[in-house]
Length: 222
Image (cartoon, rainbow, N blue to C red):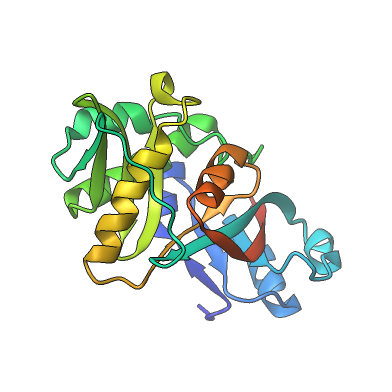
């Protein structure tokens, strides 16, 4: 198999079909995808000419942006009822995770089932829990959400429904970011959907700035 596309086994496990990511935006890569059965993902610069994508059957799913912030810019907030811990009940975390990612590109893809998209994020959280890369977010000692991380990257996070929209997340994100910076990282990064305004505003309020926007296109090849 040429290196123009690569398999994504973690997605295949959730969707039950071959899944692929294109490594470049080129006619050759798009033609190889067209000859390879399965679900394909390509990330491109928002200002790139999209003509080839449309000619090869790719459709838009999302725009991702990267929040990033160092210790000098981080604006923290504290509350005595908000705490974090690496001690977390996995079953309770998975309940919070299931169905929490409506803004995700897989949920927005009309060719994929919502239940399989939910499973994809559930599986990801399980892997992070097994690797002990998850902070539990606690409010008055009750589990209210989680933030999964890989090094200095906040890779998966969700807040339970009863705690959303109450301006509480800034306290938990402040604690997690401060702890990761104190552990030796120079910067905290994440990747979010540009359509998720609640999370975008959260990061902006904490002093994060944004770069590296990428449009995400999919194609399903029978």
